[in-house]
Length: 255
Length: 238
Image (cartoon, each protein chain N blue to C red):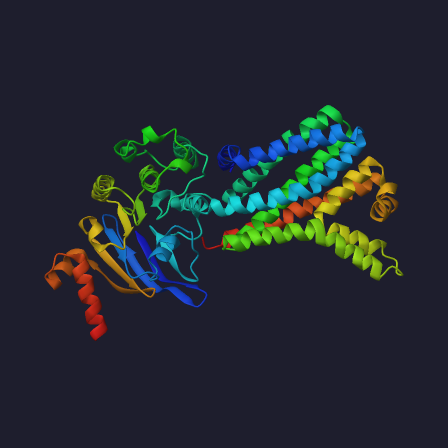
């Protein structure tokens, strides 16, 4: 498997998209840290950026990479290799390259301007979200044969988690504001990896009072330490479940 | 050595393979022919483990091919369309395949790498290769590990006449070493000189499976294309 990972990485790091992604992240992070004047403002800005851009790039790049590698994956599958090895190799290669771009593009500025617990939490969340959304991209790509439909699905997944889910949550909270909503709200947060990531960073920043209802709730219900660890646990499931499903489908798939 | 028993595969409502039972031995060179959608590629893909049949089994030297990926070490495959990761160099692609196949073969066979002068392309990235060059690379990779079975899907499509001739000679030489060759082609005249048997599929069923010499003698015509056309007309009349 590591052999495949190595060659997939060697292929992807030369792709212009990954290079552009790294440079854009670098420029944006330096910009945010310098324009705001205040480090914590810079971090908040960076948080919003990561929550929007990382899922989008991972979904689109992961999906397109999978479809473009289709003939190559077919060739690998005709070799004495297990299907699981092939898919995991591709996954780790793509996720590894995107994590590398993130660590360079955001890690470097964070190290220079905000080398504290919050900064590193932000980076860790970025890495975890990369894994989650590459796994979701692979799941979508494995499940659909048609490239256009697969890319469409990736866009839909992003649109839902980045925008729609929050709106739906607000709607439900307005509609049922007369009822106790702590538990359902927690459940709804757990259903969105982006929200989970945001909660982890904000709890770490200890500005939960500033971030309104969900943060205060999380802090109130779980406290900082256990809040972070349970959110991290659920995020881990967000990697393992899509990846497991993708492997399950891929093992039975007619190539 | 390669035996299929009652192999059946449907894609939705389409029966791509319908109860195909066939046995192929070392030293044979089997040409799979049939109209588009007749199940040629599906049969090949079943043998490679790329497509999982609904029913039936496929064995290689009495071992079931469907359960054990390691059995594929005995197979070399040249796909119809070879596409490689855009930014990898030709040399890296060959190295990667060597690493994947490391320990699964006794000797490597670099005849085609030399004949096609692949060394000259070693520093080109896959993205910059023309269709014919990719075909050459695919062919090299199929033969590189000295496999006992060679599966070549439309091997001469896209190759220049010289390269096609080199490849045909190589196939001929490998068959003489008592290997099984499985070929497909839609141009019947193209591969008849390196074919020993013809397997004609139509709508996923075997129409016939006979030695090519027998077909020529029976119809008094040494051109496979004309023989097949004649058989098809007879079928239509009957």
